[in-house]
Image 1 (cartoon, helix red, strand yellow):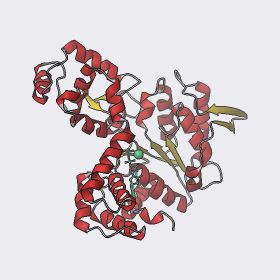
Image 2 (image 1 turned 90 degrees about the horizontal axis):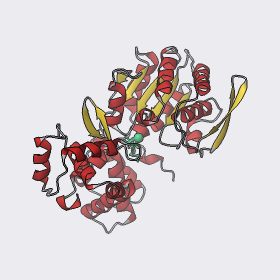
Image 3 (image 1 turned 135 degrees about the vertical axis):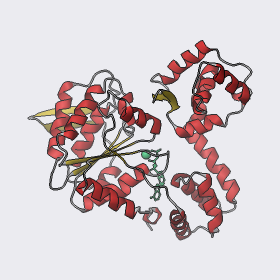
Image 4 (image 1 turned 120 degrees about the vertical axis):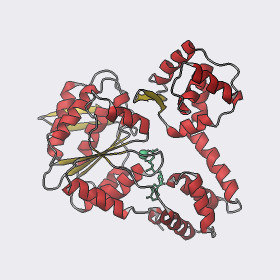
Length: 371
Ligand SMILES: Nc1ncnc2c1ncn2[C@@H]1O[C@H](COP(=O)(O)OP(=O)(O)OP(=O)(O)O)[C@@H](O)[C@H]1O
Ligand SMILES: [Mg+2]
């Protein structure tokens, strides 16, 4: 038996998205949304197959997938899309550490494992332009999907790349359509709302609809088909809602129940929460940062507007912190949290935000003794 019965197709939304991009007045969408709601899944399991079914080429670049420069990721993904393999075959394929690209009457060797720092090589930008040109097709526009796109802005020396990409897309609007998404809403917002940046208000905002009861019913069927014992619908729906309608946690919960049928609903939830915490490495990050940094992170997670003044001090006192950081310490903590190593906060619309909303929720749950 395959695993396909677990996939819940978002048929109506896929139709709408496909039609808008292929026949509509826009050629780029930015899909923001809360974490773990199925953005990546939608792109790779619904939208890409739909484009491919109608004979369009599909590029999927995930800027987290490979530790390398964003430009290398982009070139690699474009190159893959021009090959004969189907999208599904490409997704299954292991990324090779070194790849040789050919074009422009020359060869270019990319090392996808080296973390490139510094500026973007101008000759490689020419390669990008050449790839976009080869991919552009006004009869069957190629779909470019950029996942974890916020990482581009965080990579050093990426301004030239962003400008080149923006120009490359603008000049080929009939032949290329794009969807931008990522796991950090604050990071993406910062990128698309920075006034002087190339992607300022670029594309149409496009929200992934929240999954509803139909999804719960569908997953319960898949669960029974995989051998699970009956779960009452209301019990399942309550769990789904508790996890903010996130398909992933609901699915983890069903998996725990499949693995250990003796667990009841609540015990399975405990197991899921423990697993989330361990896998996300939140505690590790917490242990690596200083006391003032933890307090500052909490202020940001709680959405306190003025980090240096009275409001912040009162807020921290309210949580029960006896050792409260001074304004200077908070200032230094912000710099530290925003540095490359953690980058746990980003500035957007003149306010700091925690990049990962799950981490923010985790920080909010810490008691005063943990600071
Ligand atoms: N339509 C669906 N049918 C079945 N399972 C789904 C569906 N959408 C999402 N899921 C499940 O939820 C998981 C998380 O989805 P996904 O990784 O796409 O979320 P995301 O919004 O991209 O998360 P992040 O914000 O971290 O990038 C998937 O791995 C899959 O198990
Ligand atoms: Mg994702």
